[in-house]
Structure formats: C-alpha cells, structure tokens
Amino acid sequence: MSDALARLLDGVIDYAGLFPPAKLSMADAVGNFLRYRSGPEAWIVDRFVCSSAKLEDFRLELDNQQISDPIPIAVIGTAAADKEAWGDCLVHDAEAMTRFIQQVGDAADIEAFEIRVPDHQNLAEYLRDLRSFSEVEVYCELPWSPAMQESLGAIAEEDWLGAKARTGGLEPSAFPTSENLAVFIQQCIQLELDYKLTAGLHHPVRGFRDEVGAKMHGFLNVLVASTMANSHDLTTKEVADILECENADEIGVKGHEVRYGEWIADLEDIEDARSIFMGIGSCSIEEPLQDLRDLNLL
Image 1 (tube, rainbow, N blue to C red):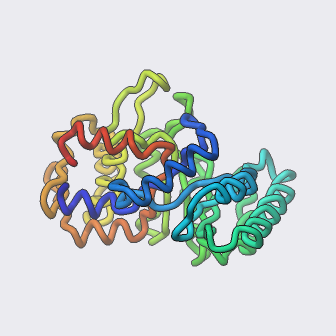
Image 2: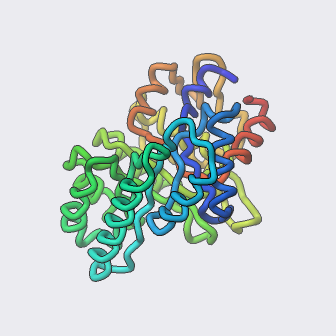
C-alpha cells in the first residue's frame, strides 16, 4: 500500500453494519467491529455507528464481549419527519444517550452525534436545539435541496458543528448528482467546515451497480476530488469530473502522491484535505478492502 493511499484512507470509515443494506444483528455487527479494530483492517476503521434507538441493545451486547479499550461510537439521531416531530425526537435521543453513558462504564464512548434535519426552512431553530449536544462532535445532515449552500453557511457559523450529506441509498433517487456533490464538497472546503458523507460509498470507483439500478459514487473519487478541490483552484465542473470518473487507472494513488489529470497532491495536501473531510459511513469494511485489492492498490 502506498503512503498516499494510507494517508487518504486513514480511519476514514465509520462502521455502520447495523444499517442497510447489511442490516446485521447487533451481535454480528459488534463482533465484526471488534475483529476489525484488532486486526489488519484497523488502519481504515474509526467509529462504530449505532442509532439512538439501539443504544440499549448495544449496551447489553457489550456485556457479552471482552472489551479492552472503549469503543468509539457515532450515534445516529432519530430522523424527524417534520418540524413538529423534531423536538420529541431530540428528547428521545438525549434520554437514550444519557442512559447509555450512565450504564456503559468504560466499555464505550460516545464521540459524535449525527442527525438529519427535516428541512432547510427551519434550520436556525434546529441548530439552536442541537447546541445541547455540543459536548461531542455534532454533524447536521442536510436534505439535498437548492438551499444547501445557504444552509452550509449557517452551519459554518457554529464552530462546534459539522455538515453531513447522504450519497446513496437503496433506490436510484437516493444518489445525488456529481455536480450537487461537487458543490457540497467545494462549499465545505471554502467555509473550512468539517464534513462527512454516508451511504452508497463502499466501492472505490464510480460505476453502475445492479443492486441499486444506478451509478454509485466511488469513495476514491470522493477522496481524490476533495483533496484536489482543497489544494487546487478547481471549478465545480472539474470537481464533478473527478467524481464522474469510472476508470480506476485515471485515479493515480501511488507513492507519496495522488494524481488526476494535470493535478497532483502530495502527502501534506492529503492531510490538509482530511483535516476537514472527517470520513464516510459504510455498512461494510471487507467489501471496500477487497475492491482495493482487486485494483492492486493493497
């Protein structure tokens, strides 16, 4: 593995084995995470992802495991259908997290709280409400909308808050266009705003996948596009072109450099880009790694 790839993918995946399409049992997901964390996959894995609704199940499963170091957790908040349901959902999440912290002891540590807001129109109110969670990292997932750029600006005004975007799902409609994703990445970089991406990113390179009937974004595309956008003055079209690339040979990750077309990024550039691109959520660790092996990158 090249130094460039190691820096690019260092701790980049939050393991979301409980979520679709994997939807593993709690026992299997926790067992996998502990195996990854102590095995050769440890370099690419960061946190265990668990919904607030399953924190109690998670705590009970920890009683069945030998835990040497606290498991870092990213808690996914309850997605409110609308503004009216938002407050009750947050109360539920806060109560579940408080109970978990009081009961789990040293076996796990909540490091982040991630939640999708119902809309952009009431974002100021949602952000005020989220301040009560700011003792941990908080990531606000925004629905894809023409209002995305304005909302990212509002999030960036809160120095304790990061942004999150959904890059796929089980239906073709869940996948944002490369142009929309490019705008999100560029805006976060310009605002110096920490950001995460989730869903549909378990393959390295963009391509059509029968299981979803759509082209899925590639995690290498996203990471290289983010790195180049951070270190070069790229247009939205140029960032989108990297996201659109379906030829792994055009995405050069070798030695101490990342190359795409005429653009080059060194290890320092990669570290700068990763300082605000906090990672991706993936329900699989083995699939991304196997794909990288198939590309002779590992």
